[in-house]
Length: 296
Image (tube, rainbow, N blue to C red; front, side):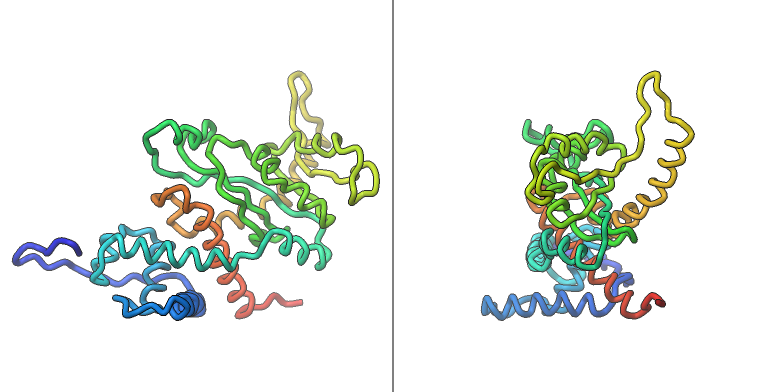
Protein backbone atom coordinates (compact mmCIF):
# COMPACT_ATOMS: atom_id res chain seq x y z
CA UNK A 1 0.00 0.00 0.00
CA UNK A 2 1.14 3.54 -0.62
CA UNK A 3 0.24 4.62 2.92
CA UNK A 4 1.46 2.91 6.06
CA UNK A 5 -1.27 1.86 8.51
CA UNK A 6 -1.60 3.75 11.77
CA UNK A 7 0.10 2.44 14.89
CA UNK A 8 -1.79 -0.45 16.40
CA UNK A 9 -3.87 -0.97 13.25
CA UNK A 10 -3.22 -4.16 11.32
CA UNK A 11 -5.17 -4.91 8.12
CA UNK A 12 -7.17 -8.11 8.02
CA UNK A 13 -6.58 -10.46 5.12
CA UNK A 14 -8.78 -13.31 3.90
CA UNK A 15 -8.72 -15.97 1.21
CA UNK A 16 -11.03 -16.10 -1.79
CA UNK A 17 -11.68 -19.05 -4.10
CA UNK A 18 -11.72 -18.38 -7.84
CA UNK A 19 -14.13 -20.64 -9.77
CA UNK A 20 -11.55 -21.22 -12.49
CA UNK A 21 -9.51 -24.23 -13.51
CA UNK A 22 -5.81 -24.67 -12.89
CA UNK A 23 -5.03 -25.03 -16.63
CA UNK A 24 -6.40 -21.52 -17.20
CA UNK A 25 -4.00 -20.13 -14.63
CA UNK A 26 -1.14 -22.07 -16.18
CA UNK A 27 -2.05 -20.87 -19.67
CA UNK A 28 -2.02 -17.21 -18.65
CA UNK A 29 1.15 -17.64 -16.62
CA UNK A 30 2.83 -19.19 -19.67
CA UNK A 31 1.88 -16.21 -21.82
CA UNK A 32 3.28 -13.78 -19.26
CA UNK A 33 6.46 -15.82 -18.87
CA UNK A 34 7.04 -15.91 -22.63
CA UNK A 35 6.36 -12.17 -22.88
CA UNK A 36 8.88 -11.38 -20.16
CA UNK A 37 11.45 -13.60 -21.81
CA UNK A 38 10.92 -11.80 -25.11
CA UNK A 39 11.33 -8.41 -23.45
CA UNK A 40 14.30 -9.66 -21.41
CA UNK A 41 12.56 -8.23 -18.39
CA UNK A 42 14.49 -7.97 -15.17
CA UNK A 43 13.30 -8.85 -11.69
CA UNK A 44 9.69 -8.01 -10.89
CA UNK A 45 7.71 -7.88 -7.69
CA UNK A 46 5.62 -10.92 -8.63
CA UNK A 47 6.36 -13.96 -10.74
CA UNK A 48 4.31 -14.95 -13.80
CA UNK A 49 2.04 -17.25 -11.80
CA UNK A 50 1.37 -14.62 -9.12
CA UNK A 51 0.65 -11.96 -11.74
CA UNK A 52 -1.70 -14.33 -13.56
CA UNK A 53 -3.53 -15.06 -10.30
CA UNK A 54 -3.99 -11.35 -9.58
CA UNK A 55 -5.22 -10.69 -13.13
CA UNK A 56 -7.77 -13.52 -13.00
CA UNK A 57 -8.99 -12.27 -9.62
CA UNK A 58 -9.52 -8.78 -11.06
CA UNK A 59 -11.34 -10.09 -14.12
CA UNK A 60 -13.52 -12.57 -12.24
CA UNK A 61 -14.41 -10.72 -9.03
CA UNK A 62 -13.63 -7.08 -9.91
CA UNK A 63 -12.24 -6.06 -6.49
CA UNK A 64 -10.75 -2.68 -5.74
CA UNK A 65 -7.23 -2.64 -7.13
CA UNK A 66 -5.83 -0.95 -4.03
CA UNK A 67 -7.22 -3.69 -1.79
CA UNK A 68 -5.94 -6.48 -4.00
CA UNK A 69 -2.55 -4.82 -4.44
CA UNK A 70 -2.16 -4.43 -0.68
CA UNK A 71 -2.08 -8.20 -0.30
CA UNK A 72 0.75 -8.38 -2.85
CA UNK A 73 2.60 -5.38 -1.45
CA UNK A 74 2.14 -3.31 -4.62
CA UNK A 75 0.14 -0.22 -5.55
CA UNK A 76 -3.12 -0.04 -7.47
CA UNK A 77 -1.33 1.38 -10.52
CA UNK A 78 0.92 -1.70 -10.61
CA UNK A 79 -2.08 -4.02 -10.54
CA UNK A 80 -3.70 -2.00 -13.33
CA UNK A 81 -0.51 -2.29 -15.39
CA UNK A 82 -0.46 -6.06 -14.84
CA UNK A 83 -4.09 -6.34 -16.00
CA UNK A 84 -3.54 -4.29 -19.15
CA UNK A 85 -0.46 -6.32 -20.02
CA UNK A 86 -2.28 -9.63 -19.54
CA UNK A 87 -5.43 -8.75 -21.49
CA UNK A 88 -3.27 -7.58 -24.41
CA UNK A 89 -1.54 -10.96 -24.49
CA UNK A 90 -4.88 -12.81 -24.28
CA UNK A 91 -6.60 -10.69 -26.92
CA UNK A 92 -3.83 -11.49 -29.39
CA UNK A 93 -4.89 -15.16 -29.17
CA UNK A 94 -8.49 -14.49 -30.20
CA UNK A 95 -9.42 -16.21 -33.46
CA UNK A 96 -10.42 -13.94 -36.33
CA UNK A 97 -14.03 -13.93 -37.47
CA UNK A 98 -13.36 -15.36 -40.95
CA UNK A 99 -11.49 -18.32 -39.52
CA UNK A 100 -14.25 -18.98 -36.97
CA UNK A 101 -16.94 -18.95 -39.66
CA UNK A 102 -14.84 -21.15 -41.94
CA UNK A 103 -14.58 -23.80 -39.23
CA UNK A 104 -18.29 -23.53 -38.50
CA UNK A 105 -19.21 -24.01 -42.14
CA UNK A 106 -16.84 -26.98 -42.39
CA UNK A 107 -18.78 -28.70 -39.58
CA UNK A 108 -21.99 -28.36 -41.58
CA UNK A 109 -23.62 -25.67 -39.45
CA UNK A 110 -26.21 -23.48 -41.17
CA UNK A 111 -27.44 -20.90 -38.61
CA UNK A 112 -25.50 -18.46 -36.43
CA UNK A 113 -27.22 -16.65 -33.56
CA UNK A 114 -26.59 -12.90 -33.38
CA UNK A 115 -27.43 -10.64 -30.47
CA UNK A 116 -26.26 -7.42 -28.83
CA UNK A 117 -25.80 -6.30 -25.25
CA UNK A 118 -24.81 -3.18 -23.34
CA UNK A 119 -21.66 -3.14 -21.22
CA UNK A 120 -22.20 -0.44 -18.61
CA UNK A 121 -19.47 2.12 -18.04
CA UNK A 122 -18.90 5.04 -15.74
CA UNK A 123 -20.24 8.40 -16.78
CA UNK A 124 -17.43 10.72 -17.77
CA UNK A 125 -17.57 14.44 -18.36
CA UNK A 126 -17.31 16.01 -21.79
CA UNK A 127 -19.33 15.99 -24.96
CA UNK A 128 -17.45 12.98 -26.32
CA UNK A 129 -19.10 10.74 -23.72
CA UNK A 130 -22.64 11.65 -24.83
CA UNK A 131 -22.38 9.07 -27.60
CA UNK A 132 -22.07 6.35 -24.92
CA UNK A 133 -25.52 7.08 -23.46
CA UNK A 134 -28.04 4.37 -24.32
CA UNK A 135 -31.62 5.63 -24.39
CA UNK A 136 -33.10 2.12 -24.11
CA UNK A 137 -31.27 1.21 -20.91
CA UNK A 138 -31.00 4.81 -19.62
CA UNK A 139 -27.34 4.31 -18.85
CA UNK A 140 -23.90 5.03 -20.26
CA UNK A 141 -22.22 2.05 -21.84
CA UNK A 142 -20.84 0.31 -24.90
CA UNK A 143 -22.74 -1.90 -27.36
CA UNK A 144 -21.23 -5.30 -28.17
CA UNK A 145 -22.45 -7.94 -30.64
CA UNK A 146 -21.83 -11.62 -30.08
CA UNK A 147 -22.11 -14.63 -32.38
CA UNK A 148 -22.93 -18.05 -30.96
CA UNK A 149 -23.79 -21.43 -32.40
CA UNK A 150 -27.11 -23.18 -31.83
CA UNK A 151 -25.83 -24.54 -28.50
CA UNK A 152 -24.96 -21.10 -27.12
CA UNK A 153 -21.18 -21.40 -27.33
CA UNK A 154 -19.48 -18.08 -27.95
CA UNK A 155 -17.88 -17.85 -31.37
CA UNK A 156 -16.98 -14.19 -31.72
CA UNK A 157 -17.31 -10.89 -29.86
CA UNK A 158 -17.33 -7.69 -31.88
CA UNK A 159 -15.51 -4.47 -31.18
CA UNK A 160 -17.12 -2.18 -28.61
CA UNK A 161 -19.23 0.58 -30.16
CA UNK A 162 -20.76 3.70 -28.54
CA UNK A 163 -23.80 2.99 -26.39
CA UNK A 164 -26.20 4.95 -28.57
CA UNK A 165 -25.66 2.49 -31.44
CA UNK A 166 -28.61 0.21 -32.17
CA UNK A 167 -27.99 -3.51 -32.62
CA UNK A 168 -28.91 -3.51 -36.30
CA UNK A 169 -26.75 -0.43 -36.92
CA UNK A 170 -23.82 -2.12 -35.24
CA UNK A 171 -24.33 -5.24 -37.37
CA UNK A 172 -24.39 -3.18 -40.55
CA UNK A 173 -21.35 -1.16 -39.54
CA UNK A 174 -19.37 -4.30 -38.75
CA UNK A 175 -20.59 -6.04 -41.95
CA UNK A 176 -21.68 -9.12 -40.01
CA UNK A 177 -24.16 -10.29 -42.65
CA UNK A 178 -21.58 -10.08 -45.44
CA UNK A 179 -19.10 -12.20 -43.45
CA UNK A 180 -21.76 -14.82 -42.76
CA UNK A 181 -22.93 -14.85 -46.37
CA UNK A 182 -19.41 -15.43 -47.67
CA UNK A 183 -19.37 -18.72 -45.74
CA UNK A 184 -22.93 -19.79 -46.52
CA UNK A 185 -24.28 -19.15 -43.02
CA UNK A 186 -27.65 -17.65 -42.05
CA UNK A 187 -27.93 -15.07 -39.23
CA UNK A 188 -30.76 -15.31 -36.68
CA UNK A 189 -31.57 -12.28 -34.53
CA UNK A 190 -34.32 -10.89 -32.33
CA UNK A 191 -36.80 -8.11 -33.11
CA UNK A 192 -34.01 -5.57 -32.83
CA UNK A 193 -32.74 -6.88 -36.17
CA UNK A 194 -36.11 -6.58 -37.89
CA UNK A 195 -35.49 -4.94 -41.25
CA UNK A 196 -32.01 -6.43 -41.64
CA UNK A 197 -33.38 -8.52 -44.51
CA UNK A 198 -33.92 -5.36 -46.55
CA UNK A 199 -30.17 -5.18 -47.06
CA UNK A 200 -30.41 -8.44 -48.97
CA UNK A 201 -33.15 -7.14 -51.26
CA UNK A 202 -30.99 -4.22 -52.26
CA UNK A 203 -28.28 -6.62 -53.47
CA UNK A 204 -29.31 -7.28 -57.07
CA UNK A 205 -26.12 -9.14 -57.97
CA UNK A 206 -24.11 -11.26 -55.55
CA UNK A 207 -20.75 -12.87 -56.25
CA UNK A 208 -21.49 -15.75 -53.89
CA UNK A 209 -24.96 -16.50 -55.30
CA UNK A 210 -23.86 -15.81 -58.90
CA UNK A 211 -26.83 -13.53 -59.48
CA UNK A 212 -29.63 -12.19 -57.28
CA UNK A 213 -28.76 -12.62 -53.62
CA UNK A 214 -30.54 -15.61 -52.08
CA UNK A 215 -29.45 -15.16 -48.46
CA UNK A 216 -32.18 -14.90 -45.83
CA UNK A 217 -32.14 -13.33 -42.37
CA UNK A 218 -34.15 -15.09 -39.65
CA UNK A 219 -36.10 -12.68 -37.43
CA UNK A 220 -39.41 -13.11 -35.56
CA UNK A 221 -42.66 -11.69 -36.81
CA UNK A 222 -43.42 -8.20 -35.56
CA UNK A 223 -46.92 -6.84 -35.04
CA UNK A 224 -47.82 -3.63 -36.82
CA UNK A 225 -50.47 -0.98 -36.23
CA UNK A 226 -53.95 -2.43 -36.84
CA UNK A 227 -52.35 -5.68 -37.96
CA UNK A 228 -51.92 -8.04 -35.01
CA UNK A 229 -50.11 -11.31 -35.29
CA UNK A 230 -52.03 -14.37 -36.35
CA UNK A 231 -52.06 -17.58 -34.33
CA UNK A 232 -49.63 -19.23 -36.74
CA UNK A 233 -47.23 -16.27 -36.49
CA UNK A 234 -47.35 -16.40 -32.70
CA UNK A 235 -46.53 -20.11 -32.78
CA UNK A 236 -43.67 -19.43 -35.18
CA UNK A 237 -42.32 -16.73 -32.83
CA UNK A 238 -42.51 -19.15 -29.90
CA UNK A 239 -40.52 -21.78 -31.78
CA UNK A 240 -38.04 -19.17 -32.96
CA UNK A 241 -37.52 -17.83 -29.42
CA UNK A 242 -36.91 -21.36 -28.14
CA UNK A 243 -34.18 -21.77 -30.76
CA UNK A 244 -32.68 -18.32 -30.18
CA UNK A 245 -32.60 -18.40 -26.38
CA UNK A 246 -29.27 -20.24 -26.52
CA UNK A 247 -27.52 -16.96 -27.31
CA UNK A 248 -28.39 -15.72 -23.82
CA UNK A 249 -26.27 -18.52 -22.42
CA UNK A 250 -23.31 -17.22 -24.37
CA UNK A 251 -23.74 -13.74 -22.91
CA UNK A 252 -24.20 -15.24 -19.45
CA UNK A 253 -20.88 -17.06 -19.76
CA UNK A 254 -19.19 -13.82 -20.83
CA UNK A 255 -20.74 -11.72 -18.09
CA UNK A 256 -19.70 -14.16 -15.39
CA UNK A 257 -16.56 -12.06 -15.46
CA UNK A 258 -17.72 -9.38 -13.05
CA UNK A 259 -15.40 -6.76 -14.43
CA UNK A 260 -18.14 -6.28 -17.05
CA UNK A 261 -20.77 -5.43 -14.43
CA UNK A 262 -19.62 -1.82 -14.67
CA UNK A 263 -16.46 -1.15 -16.62
CA UNK A 264 -14.08 1.13 -14.75
CA UNK A 265 -11.24 0.86 -17.25
CA UNK A 266 -11.00 3.48 -19.97
CA UNK A 267 -13.28 2.73 -22.89
CA UNK A 268 -10.30 2.51 -25.25
CA UNK A 269 -9.39 -0.77 -23.54
CA UNK A 270 -12.92 -2.23 -23.86
CA UNK A 271 -12.39 -4.15 -27.11
CA UNK A 272 -9.11 -5.65 -25.89
CA UNK A 273 -10.78 -6.67 -22.63
CA UNK A 274 -13.71 -8.33 -24.42
CA UNK A 275 -11.43 -10.31 -26.71
CA UNK A 276 -9.37 -11.43 -23.71
CA UNK A 277 -12.48 -12.57 -21.83
CA UNK A 278 -13.62 -14.42 -24.95
CA UNK A 279 -10.35 -16.36 -25.01
CA UNK A 280 -10.64 -17.22 -21.31
CA UNK A 281 -14.29 -18.25 -21.65
CA UNK A 282 -13.58 -20.52 -24.60
CA UNK A 283 -10.59 -22.02 -22.78
CA UNK A 284 -12.74 -22.84 -19.75
CA UNK A 285 -15.43 -24.37 -21.97
CA UNK A 286 -12.89 -26.53 -23.79
CA UNK A 287 -11.53 -27.79 -20.48
CA UNK A 288 -15.03 -28.74 -19.30
CA UNK A 289 -15.75 -30.49 -22.59
CA UNK A 290 -12.54 -32.48 -22.27
CA UNK A 291 -13.25 -33.44 -18.67
CA UNK A 292 -16.92 -34.25 -19.30
CA UNK A 293 -17.35 -35.23 -22.97
CA UNK A 294 -20.86 -35.32 -24.37
CA UNK A 295 -21.99 -38.90 -25.04
CA UNK A 296 -22.56 -39.71 -28.70
